[in-house]
Length: 387
Image: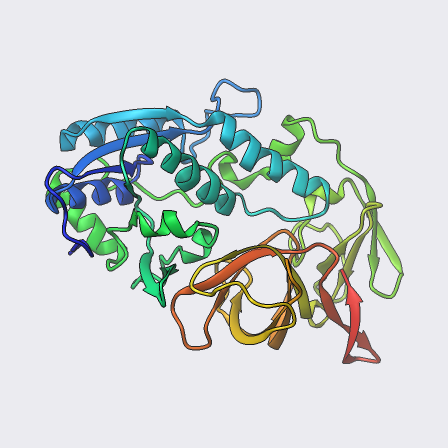
């Protein structure tokens, strides 16, 4: 059960970001039971009448989800409002999503949304209303380490969402409440049933909220992006085929290449001229990369030239691996101490202490900075080939 870390003041107000799903609904209910004066809000992030939005396909943040969130507010008898966030969402999330694919990067829109919309813009709205705290249904926790605040892993590691929250500022972390951080999904659904919430059995969405069925290629085309055709070639330089657009590929991709080969092929790199470089699985192993757009959490900013051993997580579903981090000033050089496959420019990387369960920092994997091992005479040799 949820227990607030600090004593709830009499009639203390808190804003709960309600998506229309069971997690945020239960978060709101638990906060009510803990004594908070709860205000529910739904963030309208998308113009549903826009040509690039297909409302016939189910996705989170859809009109149906807004109705579900409103129904939860009625069920809990709390004030409920819809806040228009289309402008900041468009500028911070949609525009970056499109531009990253144009530039050969693979974006992480959920990180951008959490950093600048669900927390950044929502906290600005809260301040206007004189409200200090917000809460969400994320599976995460907050910890204070040596005077700094950080996101800590959830108890349920299958649902842990710390990876998506590395971009939060110190002030925002300090004033955020995560009621579900100590629970698993089964417990959450049981609580929803106990509370009589109308979304108790609602299935989860597993896709990017503005891209139903994860068909990002169709979305990019509807937004007017022109795809750059080019050649498939092996790392050796041999051309083995053509494709209709480099924007349709991502580093590490194996399926959907349309290339018949004696062994499975993976995307190793995407060149600006439209060339997509392919290789076998052993050729996807990376040695290092440069991290940019760094946000520090439990870790204080490093001095230039300072080196620390950490663990790095390079994608949401991957396990953290040991690495050495050297500060280059506004960027870090990250050197793997274990084999890691398909490091992808544009994706987020989060960092932990070697034995820690809370975030030290996070950032974006820089394009053109990844060194990978090269296959020579069937032997992998550590040469610096940058992608």
